[in-house]
Every structure is written in structure tokens, then in C-alpha cells.
Image 1: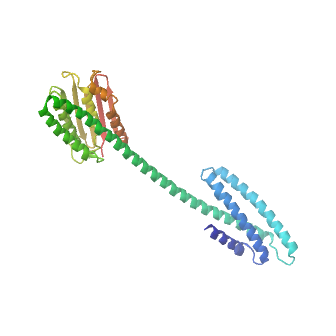
Image 2 (image 1 turned 90 degrees about the horizontal axis):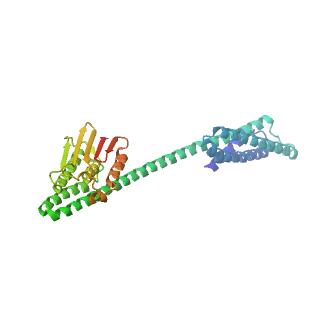
Image 3 (image 1 turned 180 degrees about the vertical axis):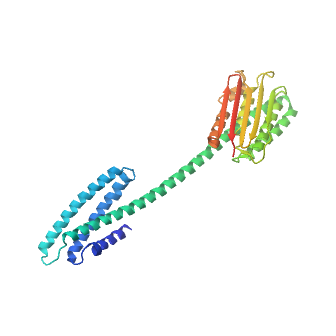
Length: 341
């Protein structure tokens, strides 16, 4: 493309900007000189000035250096043309040499060709950079999306073994004490695992199914614990089309059971779930065990489940949720509000 452009420019200079009444040989020499000069001026502008200054928004420096390039090259071209004309007048006494006005037109045409080449390059390079920027932006968005999906799967995947580990410990203890009751535990655990395996792989589930899952978990804990434990679970009925990310609420419930039972007379867990229009309100309050030798607490003292839950909330709902946690060493409260789509 560049070769065709400069061939076209040379023909343009020869037939339009140079006077045909002048000697053919002189016209060839002058046009060749100016085309070579135009080519190198264009190289300086396109490969140096435009990318380094114009694309970097250094307009003042670009204009200053461009003017300097024009002045210096104009001086060099003028001297070269003058020497060629003197040489032609001495060696070709019968030849008609260009006059001053014709030389001005020829040099002006030369710089018009330079300007046109620079404008074409600027448009072409701007378009290329725009496409490149869009490709980078798309790649960045795709990478962020894949990273988000990977983080969600990682965080959600950590919840599954965390829950299963706790429940298997519960089942182990119950089998020793009540083999009949252990059958109910296995059945309930099977239902819970079925939900986690086949429903929680989806990005969203119905709030109703999530509430049912929490209810089944509470019943499972009731089987393991004495009926005297104070557990209250209140929830409002909601439509099936109201959706939520799976297992967002569950770690708070599990955490309450993990830390809430220490004294059958004073321990309690109160859970309230309500949906008003598209806002889910989740509140849970539980007593805190002060038994430092509690093996169950020590196993999960780092709070992996809660950290994962907070991270998932940030990844999924961003600024569309409010989470307030209060811990006064005796009572632990969680107040969560999520704006559901």
C-alpha cells in the first residue's frame, strides 16, 4: 500500500505540481528529490512524532517539533533545489528551468503529500489502537468473569466439605448413642447433599428452596441435639420466582449452631427470614459458647465458612447488600439485607 501511495504521489508531483513547459530531465530530478524528501519527512512524523507525542496528548511538543521539522527540511529542500537549478543552467544552457513561483508550487505540493500521508497514517493507527483497546477490554472482562466464576466455585466448593465434615462428626456421635435416630439423620443428610450437589451448581435458586434447605438442616440439628435447645425459625412465604445465590445464608446458620450451644438452659438461636418486594431480610441471633475446650469450636476456629460467605456476597451482589455483624462475646447477631433481582 505504501509503495502504491508513493508511486501515485510521484506521478501527482510530476504531472500536476510541475510545469510541463520545463525541461523533462529537470522535472524528473526535482520530483525525485522532493518525493525522497517527502518520504523521510513522513517517516519522522508517522513513526516518531505521532506515536510519541500526539497519541500521548503532548500537543504542544508535537506542534513545536513538527514546525521545527518543517523549517529544517524546507531549508534543506530549498538549498538542494537551488543547487540543482544552478547545475542545470550551467550544464544545459538551452534547457528551460523552473521559475520561483513554480518552485514554490512544487514545494507546497510536496508538503501537501506529506500532510495527506500523515493524516492517513493517523486515522489508520487510531483505528488500530481503538480495535486493540476494545480487544484488550473484552479480554479483561472475560478474564475477570472467569476469575469471578473460579472464585465463586472455589468459595462455594469450600462450603461443601466444611458442612459435610461437621455433619459426619455429628452422625458418628449419634450412631453410638441411637442407631434408630441415625437412620433419620442419614435420610436428612441425603436430602441436604442432594440439594447441594444438584441445585447449588446453578447460579441462582429460589428463595423458597433455600429456606427449605435451611429448615431441613435445622431439623437435622434437632435430631442430634436435645429438644430442650431453644431454636426458633421464622420465615415468610415467598414466590418461586424470587431468586438468590445458593448457600449465601447457610454459613451464618451453620455458624450459629457451631457456636451457639453450650448450656441447654441459656443457649438459643433465633432466625428470621423475610422478603419484601425484591429485598431479602435475614436476621440471626445466637448465644456464644464460652467453653474453650469445645472440640467442635476449635476445629473451625478460623471461621472459614463466614469468610467465604462474605467474599461470595461481595462477588455476587457487590454494592446491593448490607451486612452488619455484632459480637459482644455473649450474643452474636447477623443482620443481612440483599437486593434481589
